[in-house]
Length: 232
Ligand code: C5J
Image (tube, rainbow, N blue to C red; front, side):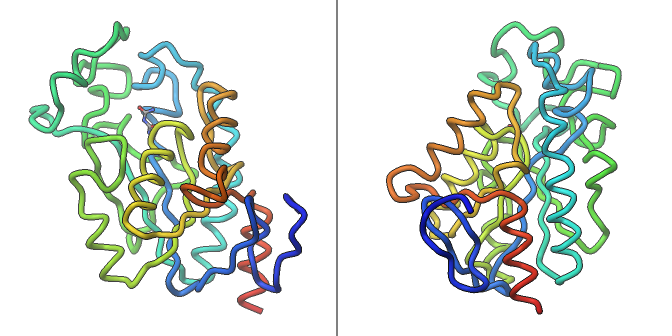
């Protein structure tokens, strides 16, 4: 158990406190598990990052994804990326820093962070089923300039299980956007990862501090246990 409060039956053992979810009103939101972030030669590596740091999130996400598929939970995958003509990429993003390759440049997995290229695709281990929703986003947050809000409303979603990469960038930005829109977010701690382990830790702390100012944090085992209890 992650904290001292005894969870009710079916509640997720989470921090800062257990949370009971209405499962039919809950979706699994998997952020940016794309080759461009996870594999050598993609966007993440062009920024100078050690992409092997992210691999640890794959198995926990896979376990929760399998359970979500078994229970019929709504599953939403996101992908960060831009149109081939870069019309949705602000100059301030394109010009930033001194990467080895810039967004739109040709790389070993196609043009960096461009929709339709191999690097933009989701890794095979977590590949979306045809029945699952894929949201393409130009920014870090999954609500900005996307249809995500409309999709959640259409399916009556009130709660989000959130995982993916990276903890302090797209996961945190999306959780903050979701929190402001009234969604309860449970962030799956071992289903997130960062190129910087200390940012991962602090990114989770920022979410659950101050009574859960942005949401709740639980590990995949706690989420799976609560899903199991509520479906048996
Ligand atoms: C980044 C993301 N780190 N998905 N994107 O640029 O976190």
